Image (tube, rainbow, N blue to C red; front, side, top):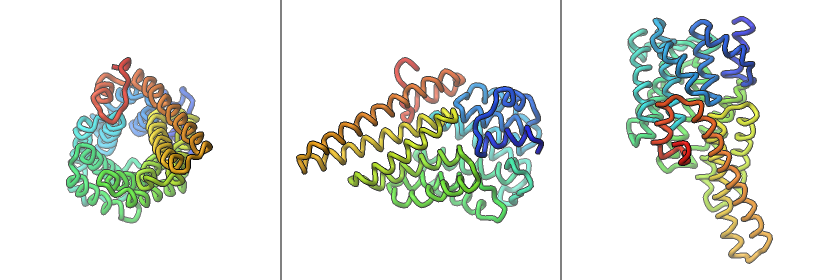
Amino acid sequence: MNPVQRRVYEAAFGGDPCLDEEIVAGAESGPPRMRWLSAVLNGARGRYARAAVVLGDLVRDTDPVVSSLAASTHAAHRRQLGGHAAARRWDARALARIVAGYGTGDAVAPDGTDRCGVTAHAALLDARLGLAADALALGRGREARVLLAGAEAAASHPGTGWRSRVRCRWVRAELELATGRPAAACAPAERAAELSREHGAVRHAVKSDIVLASARTAAARGDPGCTAHAGELAERAADTAESYGLLSLLWPAALVAAECRAADAADCRDVACRAADAAEHGDVACRAADAAKHRHTVLSTLHRVLRQTDPEGRECAIASPWVPVTGDAR
């Protein structure tokens, strides 16, 4: 990996998500693996239309690993915009491509030789985990469990890349949350955050903190102290995302922060009513104001993102019950 390639990798998966536009543009016109990394970077910044152009070419690449990873990344971008049905089609394509290129999926072994994670094993896990996340969002809980169990088994092999292990824990936490077990979601989310920081992966640490804040808030309903701490975690994630220009993570982090502060305000209101304490009522007002501020960040960030999104992606966001798109974005 030459110095420029290393900088592109560090921006996509390491500790320096900021990168000069010149270098991003160079990666976009570079070899396939650099082009894939450029699409990952552009997606992280909410530039989905720009990423889609590159990924649309790469899914037709003759290298099944590059083709599969490109399809999985396109699916992830659709999922980030609430388009889980569209993502499912791309994830299925990613799985079909890597299995067709390397035989039976279970026979693909980890290969730690490529630091960028552009390996058959990583591609297989990305496709499986994507399909599990899609199934979960589409209400196919049993299917999601089966797919996740297969991915976790594959990720347990020595040599599995850190990125795959982090993503396994994200989906595990999301599955536990979706099935009403928020306390069980906390441990995998915490481990995802630890792994991300162990490998200096800023973007993955932010996403892990968002998942963890969601889990802690859901697990701590009625406990003002716990919801307050979860809110602080989400706010730090939002601050980090904003400082690095990670718009794809900024609005979800702000959304979770708003939900945490709203829940915190509700819990404090109950305490204030019981105690008839003026100071407590003041705290309620502050938390409610924080929630409103975060909601404004959500809407303003989504407006910026949708202006940089391709038509299919915009339609996914508008149709999604998960993405709070305002009327003027429609």
